[in-house]
Length: 104
View: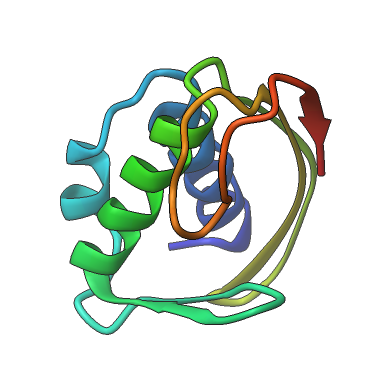
């Protein structure tokens, strides 16, 4: 695949998973040895990716993503995005709900 095709896939995956709650796309697109690096941990594999999404949806049921930038070279792609949502559900990772809109 070309760099541009990889970049389009990366954008599409974020938008489908977060904005449309389509977790099936994870099985379709993510590699078996997928790793997403986050500030406080790494998400490894398809099942952890799905669980991470479930937790996010539980804490922020109205969450929405805007993909700001997609940078790619060869088969490597990085994205910069903004997540917005109201903290309404209590989870271990995000704590008790506080009803405020977060943008990260």
